[in-house]
Length: 599
Ligand code: GCB
Image 1: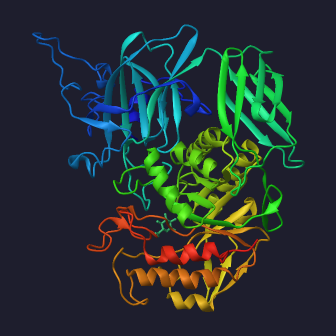
Image 2 (image 1 turned 180 degrees about the vertical axis):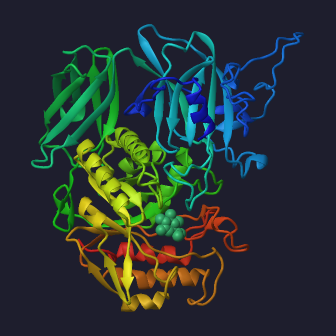
Image 3 (image 1 turned 120 degrees about the horizontal axis):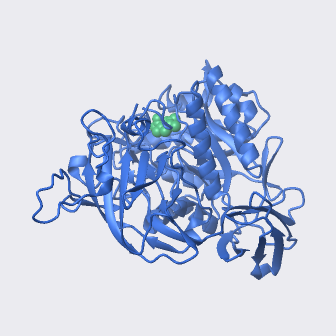
């Protein structure tokens, strides 16, 4: 049991707890940034929450007590006198003494605020890895679990005019029953890794909407607008001024207004035409704008159709690892660098592995015409036989989809990566797939599966494939097994008449290390893997896409070889310092000539 659970059990958080919400299109809302310096206290013994007999400490750090000058009061901490780090930013990258720290850590900062009458305020957290607890002015605002999904805490009742004091407790202790679980091939960057702000909305406001082109005719925008706090019968409108389109509707008792907007002559969003329209949503006193593309995506037999036409996805995997400086991607500059490389590669697709990324990534993909595979960190051996773990994954999927269903670039929701082929796993992930299809029927469901082998035959017959629209598979011939040349002998047996995406392949190379194409760790060896893999994978007739592993080298505690890895997974086409390796050119050329996958 984590200290947070212990505290919850002891009454700090009785009853149903303090849930958070997710505000759709939050990045177009009026907001006050809380980025900048926050005081921190690392608290491995959870002294800020629990006393010496593990009872909830009513004088916990969330009160941010200060002993009055000259008083003799006993206060054994001081945010004021504690060091600061930057938000957004993980703590490991900012302080040498926190480099390997995993555990609870407190953040504190003050800010001025002027509440607007008839408005609500939300504390917005772009991401807090992994469990977090948000306090404002000494009061608990919300709890959250999940290190990569965005969330918002309603602080309307506790924010005040003038100075406010925010205290946030973040615990990145890895948990067996967490999502992800104990072991991952990426660094467990702890803390407030993305933007933090206060968002202001009217009392009744649009908190969620889904507006998409219908698949059948591609000439109607359908979906709904949800108005939180609205009375039944509230008038809602959706308009696209540039296309002279407006639809109106009224909310039902649940706050939902169904939208049906005939839209015959829209310029459809696609990689060659990343057309975004300004969309204006209104409900009562609330007006919200968004920049949206309209397109359809579907599967027909073993083909993927974008706007009714077959498409080949020339992609690359990306971790949310910031180029050059390390830590998590959380700035426009990080995003521009990554997508600059994606464009240079002649790619039209990215797999945002292995968890939801900063919203800037999807916004940039929308603008640039790059298609997106988005994933939740149901990675490797999570506890598939635990219902509570299923509920956690469902919550992460809900948060991810609620945030990003307004982005045309996102076409695939991935529910898992490289999970063990067991009955419990298949039952769990079949439920996930069903949930995603009901929550967002407009996109496709996928997962990255493992491949099995019999001699030179590679077989894709994992039962989970039946629950997916598109089958992703990872293979590492030439790296974890056999040699690059062995790929020339491989034949494929695929049990499904469905589109396939090779969601990973590759090998490691240290940038600048040269040698023969048979010498592991050299750029030549990695390029050799790519050359043989491309030829081998092209023998799969229903291969509709590829996202080799990976665009850039990234930190990982399981990669220890001194002088070569030094704590980094080196399967990047580019080093963490921006040096392109030979394999980059191999893939760039394949994508230029349409040489990987079939329409
Ligand atoms: C995989 C994982 C990925 C790893 C990669 C590797 O299959 O999905 O997260 O980093 O292999 O390098 O082994």
